Length: 421
Image 1 (cartoon, rainbow, N blue to C red):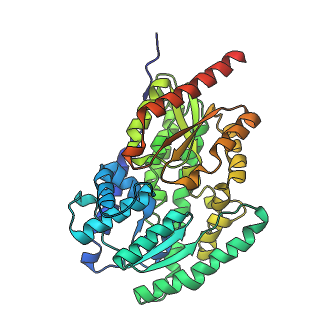
Image 2: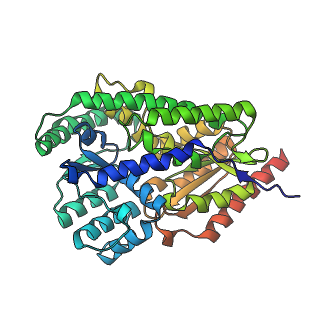
Image 3: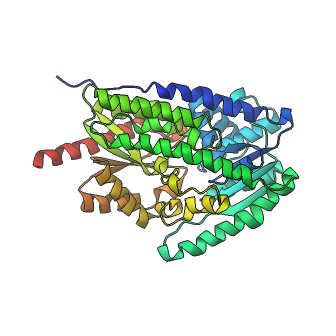
């Protein structure tokens, strides 16, 4: 008789939606209270936060829109007002929302945000510069750009780190002072980092439970729990949330309650790439009946993997070291050569059976050398992988049959290798 797999949902994750709703509601009403509003892409949003601005984070808004079911209608506005469907769905989502505000086009009220007083454009990819350019040219929104290069050679790291540090000190901070009409609040930035350090430290203790066999929670659980450690940073509400989550995971381990019923997962899967925010349920329904559990991924793990290195006494240095420090290395782990080393370590540490590389059709940055990475890791670690094409937000780019076909190929490959052992 076939096993009927299902997910044991975590109680703690029910607390996320009220926190997230409050965050976006406060942002939507900020200008009514006379507050400044900042938008940000890349890991640069803590600087507007430090100045007391209500701040929006590009990927955070996309996940929110996907979660409330507003993405499709907002993307239609973007296409109707001139954005090409081949461009980044995050970019199109924002341009569609901004055009809806400017032209009075009706969309879901919860998806509407006030246009910003300043856009801090931290550029990891070309689409983030297109996004900033679109806001400036079409809306007249002031933009301060920040170049955030990848580190392809370790010997270049210190030079790039200094380049990024100078941009924050010499361009971003003076511009924020001008826009807000007051000196930059280094004390508030330190406070934000102190809260973030505590929040991320507890979060990382939760992350350790992915190593248990069977796992006590899923990557999807973590995905919906990212807000307190990312775009809500500086809000102490994240500390009790992760404490509650940690307690529930500890209880599960002690009582032998797995994330996947009845007895735990059949396949432990590594997930690479963006989280498909508008389709979490769809993807869960493709994995779960097969006993497959996504338990780790490069995208969520990049978010402050070493909170012990955050130094609130030196806040600007600490922000830059998160991206370009010798251990933190966000910008390094994104490069293909370093990603092989990074993912290879995760395969061993988390007992991974297979790799799923989520190739977003509208975000080619993440897809660098996916087939080469799979081939190299298969030869080095003996773990097979597949590429699934889709998108984080755009439903026209997601194919059910393709997902099912490629996942079945992965599971059959894993099964075949197990039989030969």
